[in-house]
Image 1 (cartoon, rainbow, N blue to C red):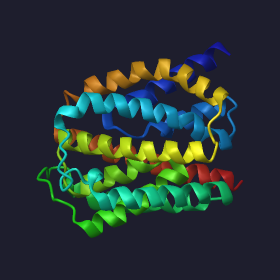
Image 2 (image 1 turned 60 degrees about the vertical axis):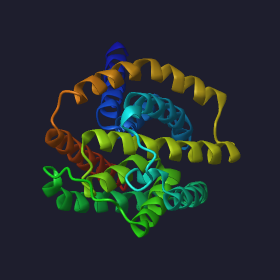
Image 3 (image 1 turned 180 degrees about the horizontal axis):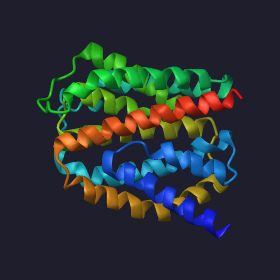
Image 4 (image 1 turned 90 degrees about the vertical axis):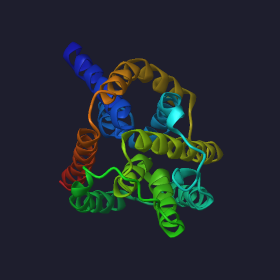
Length: 254
């Protein structure tokens, strides 16, 4: 039991480190921890969402000096992005509550792996390509859908940022803006659907105490890596997360 506790603490620290370093990927490891702790699949998201909100607020405070209110560069503030994200979250939450959506998660993971092969050549490109309104419409809709279904908004936003060649500081500032706005929408929908519980919130706060240590270690490490290495790490984590989803799906068939 003591050995298991040490492993769980290490994984919590690692999940926090990943979140602090790249801004997403937090649930990739923490979901495994929660399942090992006996948390049911249906209880995962209400426990994870408060953690997302708190950590995203901390990332915002760290990167606020790089955040601009220009909705062209900071596409998270674009009206088209906001409206389509809201609609996507509503649809995703409805699908999550009404259907078995694991097959959609599998297709998403496979798609991410394919897209990553096309993004590798952009690791040395840091000149921002401003997204247009049609791209923001498609992005907001899909990111909202993935937020409502699996809280995978960070992965969708990260791919969007890599495609448009955002440098490290702009990447973090724009990502955290989108995450905070989608968090607000997600929390509102979850409250309306009565998905949060007091016991889940207490567990979230207990986990947070450990996660914060790894989180701040990740924040400090990010400040000392080059923009190129930063993007390489992002692509590696995206690939690992997608591979994990595919393996879990295949194991679930047996």
